[in-house]
Amino acid sequence: MKTTRKCRALLSVSMNLLALFFSITAFITTYWCVGTQRVPKPKCTKLRTHNCIDYGVNETDPKVVVYSWETGDDRFLFRQFHTGIWFSCAENIHDEGEKCRSFIDLAPASERGVLWLSVVSEMLYIVLLIVGFSLMCLELVHSSTSNMIDGLKLNAFAAIFTVLSGLLGMVAHMMYTQVFQVTVTLGPADWRPYNWDYGWSFCMAWASFTCCMGASVTTLNSYTKTVIEFRHKRKTFVQSIRKEQAREALGYYRDHSLRSISQTVEVYTQTPYSSGIRTHVPAASLDPSDVSETLGEDQC
View (spheres, one colour):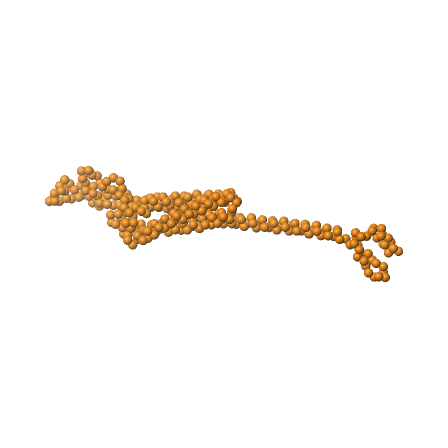
């Protein structure tokens, strides 16, 4: 029982640790959503001769009409971008590297409250995961000792905290996804994605939720199995004690009855017919010769 319980506790701790690692990674990274943005090409300069619009050598002369023969998507650049809870970063078309902006500033004003609620929920999700992980570690320590009651209490509290954290994490992920979809439609025109998809941070967030719920189910299963095993062993122990007590009581009464019968053998003698009274004489006070003489007289 101890070995099985310890294995279940180790499994719960491992899954909770994975959920905590995935959730923290997804919270601080900026790859929840990735895609491309379509931005107008900049003017060509002496330093920039590619991915730009060439207006000719007379572009500085205001009397010269400038034409651009690029039409459609040829007039635009498609730069890569990635967005997280805190920041949205995209390629810098004027220089090397990336340019990042706060995603909270990009979100529409009507959705910023939901976004902040999502951020707070993510933080509480991580905090509850840490609390559940700590309780599971304590329960793992108690599983190696004989204090089963304290271990069961810790197991129950760890399961409750883990279930709450999982539900909170699911709500937080869904709220952030909703805010991002609204921002794609109503966000700033220079930021709106041309096409996008979910990134690896999003996958890690839901993997964290999956591991969290797996840890909670494993912890609840461990608690239920331990309680059932404990009750079954206690019931078996009580039944064995009752059977042993009944067996001992039966043996005691049997021996006591035999001893009482052997020690209280009574011999009844009959007094002369004239008196009409039978005398009760203990067997220990009789002499065998007197008994035989009395029996002979009676027969005559």
